Image: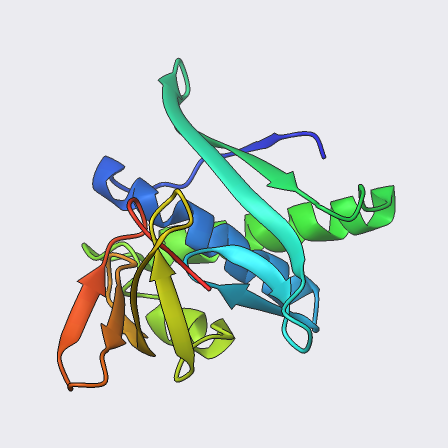
Length: 167
């Protein structure tokens, strides 16, 4: 799928939330969609990946922007679906921009948590290499998008999305 640009009217420190907001926009457009932490869009009933979200931010003569690319493992969606997705994503980004406070995910954390397919389930936390780091129950997400996993011994560990993935 070709990439497109969004220009949220938020501070630079909040731009880390854009892929999460894009995932929510896709979920708004596709009723069967859910989110696999941190922001991959999956079929909520099967867990199959629908879209991997890639973002790159920058600054140009018009201000800050984020280039969004939706990678679809099962082939490209048709033009109508692309238009529906773009519209839903833009609407979600605009709504988030208008309500964003200082916390990047603060205004949408409830919506985001409701779409997480792994929340409350047993998960493996893995390094980017795929090697397992820890196992436990996915207990929640904070306003920065970090996942909390509760281990069998009751200890809770927080994982940043920059360093870990979940399966």
